[in-house]
Image (cartoon, rainbow, N blue to C red):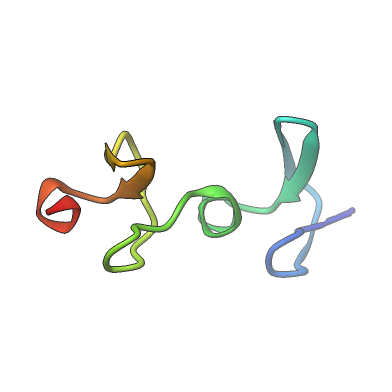
Length: 66
């Protein structure tokens, strides 16, 4: 079995995701999002999707980008 890099759960159907040159193992998409998704520069929410970029920062929505 494989251990999740986020929660440490030992899971027999884990997935691996490679970003740039780093490969991670996860037992769920929730753990992958927690480790890999950027956080909004204003409110800290995880940005799942396109989000808004402004001056090099990532925001979850237009409201936070203002």
